[in-house]
Amino acid sequence: MKKSIVFLLSVIVAVAASLAQTSLNDMSDNKALKDATVLMHTTEGDITLRLYGDTPRHLENFVKLVKEGYYDGVLFHRVIREFMVQTGDPDSKDAAPGAMLGMGDPGYTLEAEIDCPRYFHKRGALAAARQGDQTNPERRSSGSQFYIVTGRTFTPSQLDQMEHSMGMQRKQEIFNRLASENRDSIMSLRRNRDQAGLQALQDSLVQQTEAEAARNPFHFTEEQREAYTTVGGAPHLDGGYTVFGEVVSGLDVVARIENVATDRSDRPKEDVKVISMSVVE
Image 1 (tube, rainbow, N blue to C red):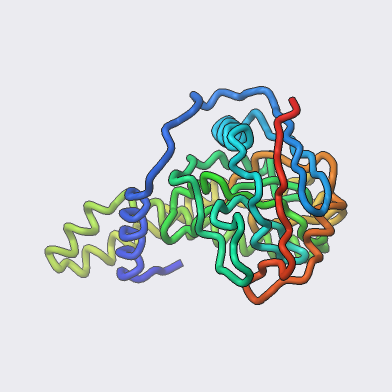
Image 2 (cartoon, rainbow, N blue to C red; image 1 turned 30 degrees about the vertical axis):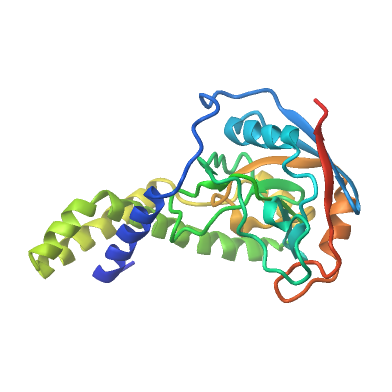
């Protein structure tokens, strides 16, 4: 897993960018809460969501926005068949036809609460959208945008191949973290134009990466394999996004939304809207 010295610097830049993000002050001390239930009225029908008490920051934030009426009138602005349906962009309210959407938020992000494989991207999973790893290596969640997984089913051999690919991705993530932890050393070696020192540090980080990955190899659990080969989902997202709930009724409504006609930006050609949401438990 050889990486270039230039790549080490790109990691530093990404980490620096993430530090500039505006974040929401913690609304809980991260202790588990009681699960909550939210009823979503849409133009395609009703969807009932269960929010996990084990992801308290996301639960509290979602409930807060629901009670404020924040989601009332937002569109499902991104719909991809056999993948997911996404909403929660405040800029989508009364958006003109064809307008580019997906960048709106309440002005803050949420600390990630990724608890995989306990919570994973099976069909019906509720998860937080976020910016990509290059600008958001901490994988902080959008303050308001979320998606519901539709996905598809996979064969055991396909899951085996994906497992291998995701194992390699985990190595990349470990290497990125180690590189960011050694930022000061990298910058010092660069200032001194010490190419040999940079190469030696890179080789050391590669060895550390391999050792850490070997101690905790990536694999799908039996529960994940059962779900992905029967009801389906989006396994390639596991471990990368916070799953904080699931659909308990209304998957038929989600399916209707999933199958509407969309434009080149994956926005439905005919608006699909969240009419209102309410906390019912």
